[in-house]
Image (tube, rainbow, N blue to C red; front, top):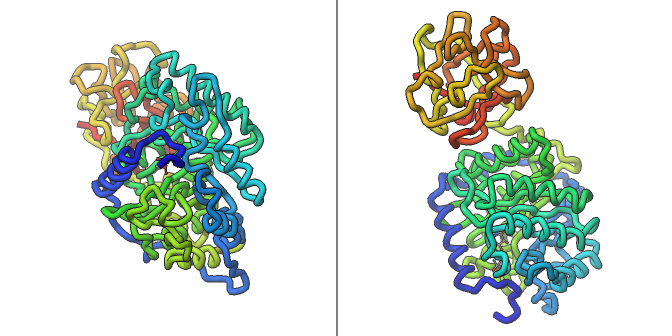
Length: 502
Ligand code: XIL
């Protein structure tokens, strides 16, 4: 126990592990999928004999978490040095390790791992800068602006030390609840913008490293948490908040397993213009089919840049009771090792992703749009969001041109009563029309004096989407909260773009 550099006691680890299992068990992600993922025909000439070399054939990496306290175990270092070409510090670069006292940084264990890895030509992924867990005691007791400042100072202090040296940083870890809302934490309580502040701070601190958001239970495309994270990344990309990558932890447990939509999720994140990676893989009892399937999903998505397993041998795992890794406690290769290696060896040298094109739910897929379902015209109705149950609302009933509309609790009042006209306008508050302030992704939706132009004409479709006649894009909301703004976005068929006129 003394060797473990984390400040989390064993019971806390067990609690966390149990919680992940419980959450996964409750999630709608129970199918093994392997059969649904396209398998690329192997290239017999390209078989490599280690995970890192096999992944490198298609331009990817294969990594592991490393614990500083095990670097004097030669079985451990022999396997790790032979098989992997990317390393994540399991605990040593977390806030409790790197800033044990406010303003006093300690990089001794982190550097031990960094030096061990880079001496062997491996790259290093930083993990993690802002997280509700594994905060030093002094940080746990801060709140408000003083915590916000401490977070900024922490990011600046740690990133200055590793500036120019790391491949990726997990800037923010695990900030969402299972339903896609933000996780309550001392960081969240400093204001909803804490995540973007963390990313902007990080970009300034080290412009050379790729900045990632990292989380668990975001592998199943139809899961609320996945959608919550997806919407945040999309928001960041549309507003120019710096973000380069999303890490999917990929902790698969007993009650759940590889979701059939995993590849779709990876493709959909990638389509936002970010790299994706599997960052902390472990699978209960190391199911060979799940290991093969998760590897294949990554290999099938060009922007899936690599896979990291969360430890070397089963005995090194934070979930050691579940034997979830690729090597047994004696350091022998398990069946799952061979299944991963075979899939990596079968990847096309240059990732194309063609074999795979995401089957369903792609954000760029155009859903069926049938304007024929237009509701009866001339009757005042509410426009209710399918995801939120909230109404499209003109704040304070303002009649000023250019008032941006929002989601708000339905109240039956005139600032939520829209009338669909035969000219396909949605009118409100007299002679105001729902109006797209532009035609691109992210264009604001506002009210404006009706003028008969196409940016004020809407098709109300049978699939629940409302599309702009001018751009063909859909009404879209960022979140389900009161005050969530409405914008235009490429139609995705997702619930945040479905509404009913009622
Ligand atoms: C775990 C480590 O493996 C344990 O040694 C430590 O006690 C707790 O943290 N998600 C993460 C990782 O992002 O940092 C966690 O690592 C596992 C879950």
